[in-house]
Amino acid sequence: MTHFNWLLDGSIVGLYLLATMATVVVVVVLWLFDYIENIVPRQRYRVVTLRGPYHFGCVTELADRFRAVGVKVSDTSYQRCEDNLSQVDIDLHVVFNDQARYDALLRQIDGEGAYQLLAGRDIGV
Image (cartoon, rainbow, N blue to C red; front, side):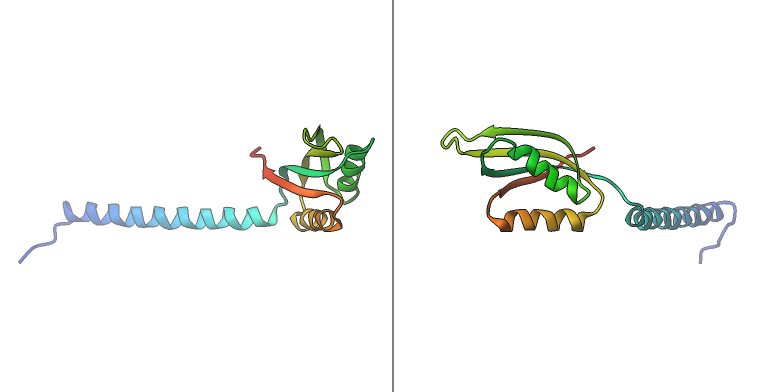
C-alpha cells in the first residue's frame, strides 16, 4: 500500500495541473487569433502573369482593368515572347483585400480569350 505524501506528491500534482491550465490557455489564445484573423481585413500581395497580344498601351490597359475593380497595381513589367513578337508576357504586382473580387476578375479576363493566365503567385510580405 502506498501513501500519498503532500510534500512529495503534491508538488507533482500541482505541476501537472499547472501544465494542463497553461495548455488550455494557449489553445484558447490560438483560437482567438484564428477568429480575429478571419474578421480583420488583410492585404494580399500577388504577382499575376498574363500572356496576350502585344499592342502599344496593352500593359497600361490591363493594369487599369485591375484598378477599376479596386485592386491596386504597384508595379508592372512585360517581356515580348521570343518565338512570336506579337505576344507579350505581362507581370502585374497587385495588392488586394477582397479575394472573391480578385478571383472573379481573373476568371473574366481568362474567359474572354484575349489574355491567358500563366501564373499567379503569392508574395510573402
